[in-house]
Length: 297
Image (tube, one colour):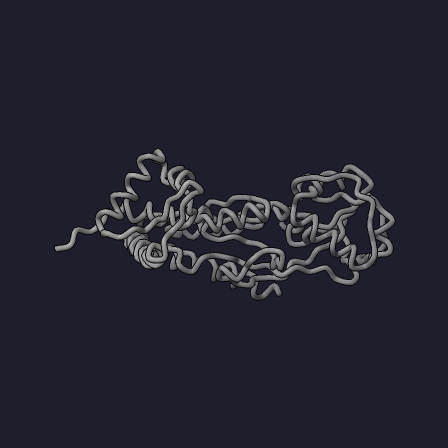
């Protein structure tokens, strides 16, 4: 009977296949680089095929190694999925890691976390508030199971499954400016100082592009890292900001903001990998959020 590789060898090979670097793979596997390299050598010796090409310039999968990686990854994912299903059926709690945009705040996702806690669902949700590029990185490296984000053509969304769940209406929040009415146009907004997201945030670029499309370049008074800091700044100063109406309402703010004319809306999606072994559990969470917002569109 053919001797089979150990699960650990195959799991570590999959790690290597994702990062294509021995140092990074060893760090991910939480073992020394020499131990990791030894495992990969033993795996190749066991099956009698070179899977990884090594040179002074680095390493990468061979053509056969690439095919083996694709097949083994599916097997490991299916095995992990089976284990998650059995645990869930037997009442064990499974943890989902969900990432949200730093520029939107985590309070919106926390509402859904509270729902599952109240209904005694047999899985836990950990929420991570990160900037867009970090969200993508963590999703790609399987550190996050699901991310909540805007549709952003700047980033490659085609690699993932995506589910639309709502349109994010952006409003002009300026509680100290004393502007009459409930709506405001761009010609008025340009006359006031703006509290904006930090320049390296994708949300900064989205808002900036919106202004540019109308030939406007408002004076930015301050750059801040979170919507909560922006809210507080506008509450203490004569300045305005572009914020999510949904977030303001979640923070129990029902006044002091104005509908932007023309409307400024962003499509919101949940992104995830379909081959995630937690897929069946993720589907419950995703469908809950879609149902929650279905009547709010």
